[in-house]
Image 1 (cartoon, rainbow, N blue to C red):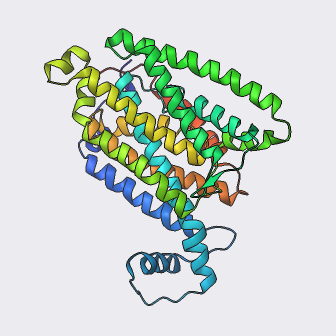
Image 2: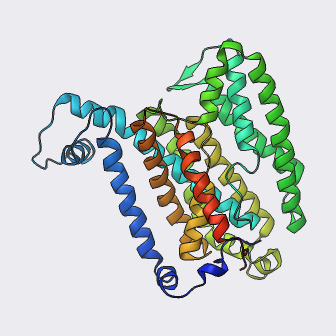
Image 3: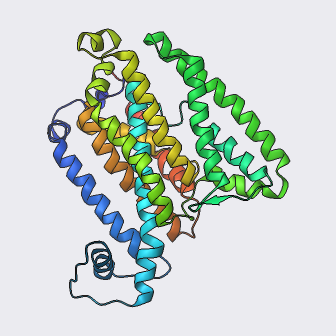
Length: 358
């Protein structure tokens, strides 16, 4: 089942054809929604702040612009120190997970692939659980041992899958997926044992598994942003290679793509973006699964369209989900994404029941 073509009940005609022929319109719409979620995410909460005050504070602190609006020091602290870092962190993570999901779906030619397909989620969870169990307190630039070991666990599990599964040819892709499943299963068993012996620390492990952005800060954002943004941008520069591999390895080689090298680079970059996102937020599902899927239905399978639009749409979706999480009582954003994403994805699967073809 290839990732990208429209299902039979959404054949390219009428409105669907008009939208697919205008990816710029889709991108601009996603950008407008992103800006809207930025303003609403910063302005709404237990203390409501007007949109003009929100925009004025952001413009003043970012560019030094004065638009003639006054605000109190408390308002500035809420906007700039508390809410804006959290909203931007949500956008950063949504961007990284969506781009990673689009990359894995394209490489594996499977619209059901997600950023955690190579066991990065299980590896991060085990790393976080080990950090909770260790009698060590370590904090560096607002990143604790939990974040560091989660990042190492996510990258380590992806590396192990690469080493054991290989990446050559169509059979290699199947072997890679099966290896990811096997490694993830082993790590899930280790995680279960860690949770069993954790005692009073069990709540902290569960918090990581549910995903959350409560500890967001400017410093954490500045540390994570280079890893996620650089990985995402480097993936986008290899859109031609990803397009070629969508056609199959033989066709990609005829187009001049070094399949083995490009696949390894793309898998490594997508795993890096996923690991960095998971390290600062915990496990947040469905962003990297649903967003690229929807974008591909709207604009077609071309990577130079899917990747940037997915980045913007993923950022908008997760920031909107985090806003919902805060408004309903600061529940974990991973729970909100599951409640929003699972029914929506079931609808997509129902509409796509006829399958996919290039």
